[in-house]
Image 1: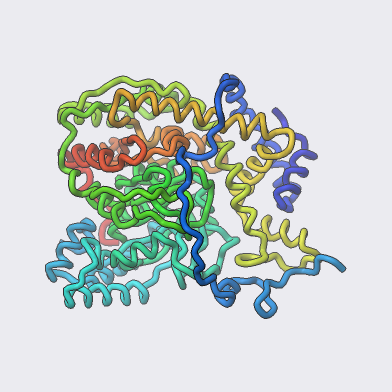
Image 2: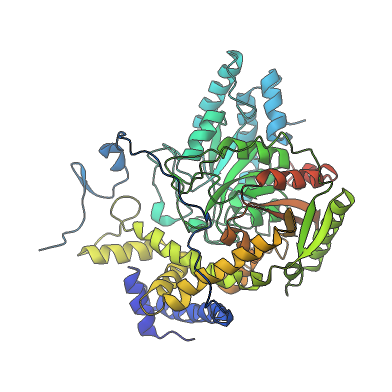
Amino acid sequence: MSLTLEEVRHVAGLARLSLSAEEEALMRTQLSAILDAVAELSRVDTSKVEPTSHAAGEVPPWRSDEVRPSFPPEKALGNAPGKVGTSFAVPKIIE
Amino acid sequence: MELTELSMLALGEKLGSGEASSVEAVRASLDRIERLDGKVKAFLHVDRAGALVQAEAADRRRKDGRRAGPLDGVPVGLKDLFLTEGLPTTAGSRILEGFIAPYDGTVVKLLRAAGTPILGKLNMDEFAMGSSTENSAYFPTRNPWNLETSPGGSSGGSAAAVAARMVYGALGTDTGGSIRQPAALTGTVGLKPTYGRVSRFGVVAFASSLDQVGPMTRNVRDCAALLQAIAVPDPCDSTSAPLKAPDYLAEIEAGVKGMRLGLPREYLELPGMDAEVRAAVEGATRALERLGATLVPVSLPHTRYALATYYLVAPAEASSNLARYDGVRYGLRAGDVKNLLAMYGRTRDQGFGLEVKRRIMLGTYALSAGYYDAYYLKAQKVRTLIKQDFVEAFRSVDAVLAPTSPTPAFRIGEKVSDPLAMYLNDVFTLPCNLAGLPGLSLPCGFTRAGLPIGLQILGRPWDEARVLRIARAFEREHDFDRRSPPLGAG
């Protein structure tokens, strides 16, 4: 199947990727080819098959909910591109 | 004999007896890295000072009679997606350039407890997406057996460093073959454990229902020893199974007599399969037969759909996992933006490479309204069928034998512009991840051009011990683990 440029832009918006015009064109071609290749799955009869979301196949283990020290804010902020006090700083959201 | 020629366990013995010191072993590795890594380009970061401090501590433990175990003092390298406190962790991406890990992930803590000095961080395809290490945002790694070729990927830096004897062992991660395929292409041993065997806490995530951490070593015994050190249940990872690992080295020499080993018809019939790889793998299966195993034909009919299934499931999970790289809390932030939405979009466009963007786009599409059922849900259902194929096969066999990669190492640049051709590298390794099984690759021959070939052994869930035992039975009868790449003195 062939994706339209509008579809590529819509998906890039959902993925929060500001693609350049060249990237949009390349994605359109390459994603269309990949979607063609994966379309072979439609030939498999899965009408009576349950989906597998996890390889473990077992119920995840339980553990007790114990109080432990949190990750210290200074360390959590150690790689912050912008910070104010003990908060991450970002461009203004609401004027 | 130079220290760097020793296996992890052989070096560990010398350290235990006092014949050599950990500081000497670290210095030998650092010298070798200095001499060779300009050509191989396996390291993104070498931690000289830190490794020497850890080596001194290991030497003190020995003197005090407090040796931590058989690997105490044996230097290792880490794929650059293991969070290691105070060291850079880039995941091979520009978006994490300059990121300094604020804590140790669980496997790093376990390595520290085992006493292995950490020599540095090893190159990889960006966010582990790739099969050649060419998707690293920094530089491609080269295969020590032929510097014009790729060491495979995504753990290509780890595999190349082990093959070139710059590290004694390494850790990698495997989402669709990223430990086993580079192990095959570099003549080393790589194991992807059962999903849930090793903690992923503090490991940069790619596709969470598939990712698994594993050892990359020069031989099978080292592989068992390194697995032993990291196969520990972890309350910080909800997928870490609360199972105590058996003693992997205890039964590794017991041989294959009486074992039933499956040969999946579909694997050797693949179009594009290299003739020399096929011949070497068939030769290896006959060698195991001579050692007392019975070869049993099995069928894994849904193998042909594994590639398509994987390339929907993994990108879908990746698109969700990589949403965290938004320029807010760590990593790159695009400058000169007016609002938050522009900051997200520009940061991600500038920080991610093309393959990562491609997979985020594909995954976002497969999860988006109107396409979820046709793509993502469909792939999850086919995944069930792939898993059931193995359940069925393991009713009649103890393990399955297959090639690791359809070809030996390929030239750098050869497949980089064609994503679908690159994806075919993983055709034999993907089913194991989709089914959550343990899988190991070990060298089983060389091409006429001198490139290594890998044999893959797939086991039942939690049955790493038997996989290692089969691998060891083969290795013991051959000398592939003792061959070194022709790098010269550099």
